[in-house]
Image (cartoon, rainbow over the protein chains, first blue to last red):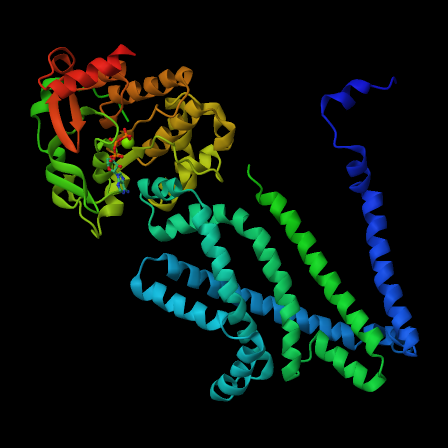
Length: 276
Length: 259
Ligand SMILES: Nc1ncnc2c1ncn2[C@@H]1O[C@H](COP(=O)(O)OP(=O)(O)OP(=O)(O)O)[C@@H](O)[C@H]1O
Ligand SMILES: [Mg+2]
C-alpha cells in the first residue's frame, strides 16, 4: 500500500510540541516522574530521620496464606466496611437529596422553607460536629449504634450537596419539556418521572461522580468514633506495629484505587447517557 | 377515526360550543396580555387566529388547555370549566392536544416512545394497542419509517409532524396549534401544512395561530384578528380577506400578504 498523505492534511493538527506533550506515552512518563519524585522525597526524608522501613511486614494486613489457607487481612475488612458505609450513606443521600430538591422546586411555601432550613443547618455545620451530634446526642435518644449514626450522618451531610446537584440538573432541562408533558395530560409527578428526571441524568452524572468520591473520602471521619472501617484499621495496625509510613501509604493507595475505579465506572455510564 | 364530512352551516349553528370564552382577561403582573376576550368554537369548527407579535395569540390558546390561567372571566372547554387549581385540568388536557412552535418532543425517547408514553402512562392503554395506534398515526403524518429514530435525527418538518401525531395519539377532540410552521425552513412548511389540511378534512376541531394565509383560506371556517390583547375582528375567510372592517386588520393583512 502507498502512503496516503492526503488524510493527514485534511484536518489541521495542533503544533508539534503540544502533540508530543499530550501523547499517551509522554503523559505516562511525566506522571511516573512526578510520582517517583514524591516517593523519592519521602524515602530521602525518612532516611534522614532514621526511619526503619519494614514493607515486608505489610502484606499480612491485606491477606495471609497459612496452613489453614487464604485469609483476608484487617485492611481488607476495613475496606469492605468503608464500601458498605459509603454505599448505604450514598443511597440515603440520594433519596434525601432528591426529596429536598423536589421540596425546593415544589413552589410550596412550607416545602421550600423546610428545605432551606435543612440546607442552611447542614451546610453550616462542620462534618465532625455533625458526626458528634448524631453519635453523642441523637445516638442515645434513638438508640443508634456507632455504625447507624455514621451512615445517617454521612447521608444527611451529603444529601445537602446532592440536593443542589439535583436542583441544578432539573433546572437545566428545557422548559418546553414541562409543557410537552403537560400538554399530553401528565401530572407533575409523571412529568418528573418520565420526562424531566431521565433528561437531567446527563447533567448530574459528572458532579455526582465527584460526590461519590467525596463520600468514600469523607467516610474516613467516622474513625473518630471507632467504626471499624479502613482508616480505623490503619490506626489500629499502627498501634500494634509502629509502621506509620507504610500503613498510611498503603491506606492512601487503597482509597485511591477505590475512587479511581469509581470515576472510571461512571465515565462508562456517562457515555451511555450522552446526547443521542 | 372515520372520515366525517362537515358542512359549514351545520358547524356554525349546531349545538353548544366546545370552547366558550366570556370576558377573559389575563394579566402578567400589571401588564394586560388579554383584554375582554369573547369567543366560541363549535365542534368541528376550524378557527385561525392571526395578529401582530405580542398581540396575545399564544396566551389565548394556552389558556384553552390551562398552560396559562386567565385572571378574570369564564372559560369552558369541552364541558369543563377551566380555572387555576381545578382538579379537571389533566382530564381537559387529554381532550385538547397542543402543537408548539418549538415541537417540544422528548429528546431522550424514540419517535415511537414519544407517541406511546402519553397513551400508556396517562390513558393507561396497553402497550400493544398504543404502539399499533402510534404506527397508524405516523402513517397519517407520512413518516411511518421513522418510528425508531430519536427526534434529533429528524428534520424540523418531520419533528413537527411527530408532534402532531403525538397529540393525535391521545385521541384529542380539539387540537391547538401555536405557529406550528414558523420555526421551520421554508421548504418544510408545506409538508406540515398538508398534514394539518388532512386533519381538517377529518372534521377535527382546530384552533390555529398561524400567518400562513394560504392555509387559512383553505381550511378556516372562522378568522380571528387580534391586536393589543383584544379580538379586533371575527369573520368568515371570504369576508375577512376581501373586506376586513377594521383599519388595523386591513393594514396587517396588507403587510403579510405582500410577502
Ligand atoms: N410569562 C410572561 N410574563 C410576562 N409577560 C408575558 C409572558 N408571556 C407573554 N407575555 C407578554 O404578553 C404579551 C402577549 O404575548 P403572546 O406570547 O401571547 O403574544 P403572541 O401574539 O403569541 O406573539 P408572537 O407572535 O410573538 O408569538 C406580550 O407582550 C408578551 O411580552
Ligand atoms: Mg406566540
